[in-house]
Length: 482
Image (cartoon, rainbow, N blue to C red; front, top):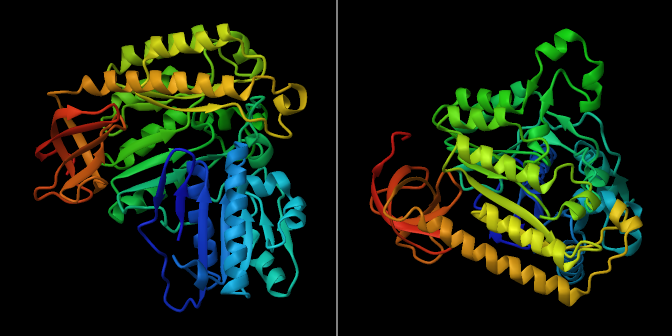
């Protein structure tokens, strides 16, 4: 079973991959960002061709794979605890079970994993999943196996993912891999390598295939989707060497969004994550042009202090960020904007923190993901800056902005009272089996009585009440998208 587990939410897959004739069983578990969940679906597809069906019973698994995150120390400690669980199951129930570590933590620790975690049989980085059959053959011969070589070309555009982490309605589509931004706090460039973009034709083909299989919404994924640039392959830096013809026919993110929107006009299109320095207004104008591109931008700012932003190597100022927010709201007045925020970055003063508070008050985000700074080995901040903010100060600042965000979220949801929103039904409400739960274009959860509607329907809902995170209403009919 694949589980979605990070520090903000937890859930379980609704789908298992069962291919007739496959005899071996794979238990796969993912931690961290949406890209990891998407990668696990690629891995499941590769392993399906090697005779593995997925299982939700750990004790029955011939192979256990854990797809890891390195963004914070807490995420890594969670993985180590899971390895202890696998070890206990292997010892007590299934001594032939093999265990592999995938993803960013595998890339960061490399051979250390084999030394530190004796249960681990194979270690595979994010760009080496196609080598899994060879590595598993090594393990089957009784040898440990490792491949953590980062690629300059691999995008997995030729792999059709097995939709494990899916409700049959929404799906992830990866469009870029890696990151070139080198924020001083972030380990991603070291664990996922240089930025490269996927062939747009393969993206459109995947979206068309999803639509033909009943999916109603896709999220275009990348560490930084706005940097998407296809001109025939290779790293983004090579674009300056490309021919005039290649440059003239290049596809940037705005172009790709338009291609996706036009390919399936009734399918919702989302994207994540954006970087303020790369989000251009042509993207926002494209969003405004097409009704099926959702009115939501996740726009991490990380800090409201110019001094801290510079220390983080974020290539934008608070003033530039605020101007971008103003332009987004001018072009798409009802566009939801969400954030990532870090408090307690090295040398952050109380004045710096108050700059973050004032920025939040200016933007009044719809929702956000907030964290205390966690030193990551190998990053510029980890190498060159002392983690000098007391833990109690970090926790106090985090609680302050979490409380502030809750106030802003309530302000935003209340603006929808007595209005009609379009909701795509995704699942049964967690609180009542008599209600459906879905999301609006702005990515706000909405619940309402089931009636005769079903999962996958687009429904118009009159909002009658709300909490800080959820709209509550009554369905008044199908939307024109059905």
